[in-house]
Length: 334
Image (tube, rainbow, N blue to C red):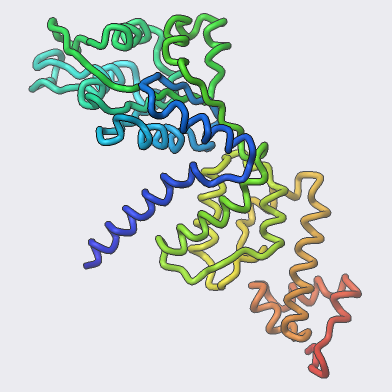
């Protein structure tokens, strides 16, 4: 039963994550999703560019799921994760005896995905020495396995992605021009999260609901201070960073509402190094003020809610006349 429950949670997590690419309020992302809807039913190759963590694979999966080959396989490979020999073997496969340890024939991903979609992430890291062979596969729809002498017919849709500027790489001679235009039949540029702040609240809510279920936590919302901090942060890791931070917050909290106290300290420290530092301090002060008022000035209770030692709260209050003046209706401020 435990294993079944874990499996269901994993499946739910994967399904919800695959839907994240459809969550947006930003006009640029709405245009991208409209473009996805147009190009998905075709069999054209697609090139997706964008920084790491922007959701390139989610867009690729959305294309596949709405395509004519949606019932076939979707296979993904990261071209930067393997050296040249391993990458060639993974893509093209090999014949028995092709090299030491090749005890049997093994089909590669190009062959295995027949009729489906292959997603090649970090296509800019495809070795130059492999690019001519890859171009031939796309043009002729056939390949030679490593160590093979007979051609193998293949049929698949290619969706490629990169966080590099492929056009610049072409100009520099680091990427074949003919291959570039072969894979760039349709082109999608995903903006970084810092250029689509309208999506932050809705994505945050999306991931909160996801991890509430996956991690079995009783948490429902963010305080307005948290959302303000999210809106000020630069998100160098993009949507992936936002998701990971919210997962951490959900796992670590025991409250129904996530507050500034739940925001990872390193994120707050990074904000301190920006011009938003004074605004951040104002947010902290407003949060403390709200908590003090909610407990009618009881500093012991407030410190517990804030998750800080009472002496630390007392030190902050001693420096702020307005905080020091907060008292309950006849209740001792302690």
